[in-house]
Length: 147
Image 1 (cartoon, helix red, strand yellow):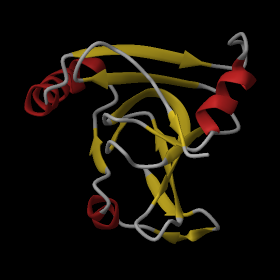
Image 2 (cartoon, rainbow, N blue to C red; image 1 turned 180 degrees about the vertical axis):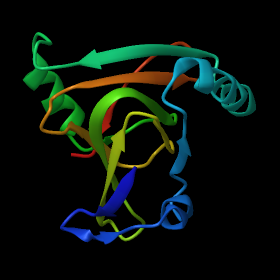
Image 3 (tube, one colour; image 1 turned 90 degrees about the vertical axis):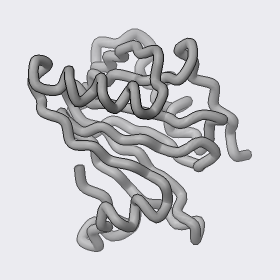
Image 4 (cartoon, rainbow, N blue to C red; image 1 turned 180 degrees about the horizontal axis):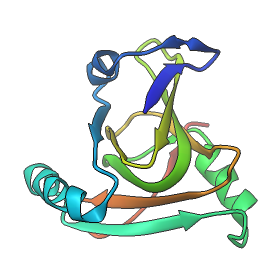
């Protein structure tokens, strides 16, 4: 994972800065037999009872329409948890000063974006991602758009 201010990729942001904004990062081993136990422990500790997986690629029907929805600035009334199983994408979050912070996630990265934090999501140039989504209740993704 790499994070930086949106307009300056060389201005790398620390994990402590993300923690100050209640954004949590957990590096996971990339192989299922190695990440299963730490993932289950995290789910138990944080009350994540459900999960699903999402795969997006250039071959995904309606990909561009889906990406437009994900890139619209929004928040959720619950945490947004993503564990990247393959591929790469970007979460852009608003910090306490309303500045964009870009977080690049790749295979093995797990990020927790807190409830009620404005953010958006985009794929990298490969246009490929396979992510596990974790939920406290039934799987749902309901954006509350900013404007």
